Image (cartoon, rainbow, N blue to C red; front, side):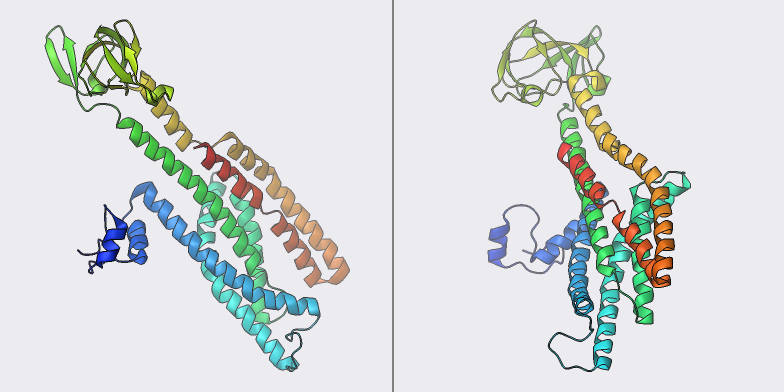
Length: 365
């Protein structure tokens, strides 16, 4: 048997371990198939997770190289502690670390930063300033300053700060996207509970229609093992009905003439004749689907609140950065001014909002 992705033979042990479904020769093929063969929202979520995993690894690498720079800066020398390297060699080693940080941080800024930049530009064109603009402002300033410090071989670098912010922001976006994907799958699952066909008794005889063609006051015939296509009352028949979808009760209940039944519930035994009262989107099942669609497509109250706060927070942050830069200029010149303004911009990045709000949305969905 061959791999479903690369079409190479699969070892017997691998086939036994994977069980049913598409078979893969290795985890790499499974991951590649999930990324490249997924379509729609599932494909976007898988690609986002792949970018997040890769950039998290690169960010940890940047942090490892940055530890050397910070340690030497704290020690007051760029030479490794306890070593007898000359000042020239120590300076070259520090420069190498800066360029390594730049090398590993650049893919992070491209893979995670460009989508945030694109969203901020699109929102800015509509006159809306959200948390994306704060992220772009802080992370962009950190990267530009670090890039200049690397080329000029003077000053501190903050590649790891920008990378960590982007990783946390993207983690929050992935959690939100995962929650919306789950809601989308739930909608599809609920829609599948409507029967494909339903027998309708009208004046001109018995017709076989789709649930969307059923009208209120139609008389529906529900066979044993069939799902009820609309809300209504039983005209004749007696059966056990599985209503776990609506009530959460796993035990089937007995329904008799005069009892109310709901769309999507399952008639387990016996046949029923139901007089439809609410059909399609007006039925209980239809309203559940509409509510899930609204929850999936709309932004929560807390997300809108965060964006409203960001609308006023961005000008305030910019003004505070300028004021801090001016005070820093008076104290220590251009270097002090840039560092003070950069500190304000980085601290203002809404990391907490970026991960807390999407996490709440993910949990709710």
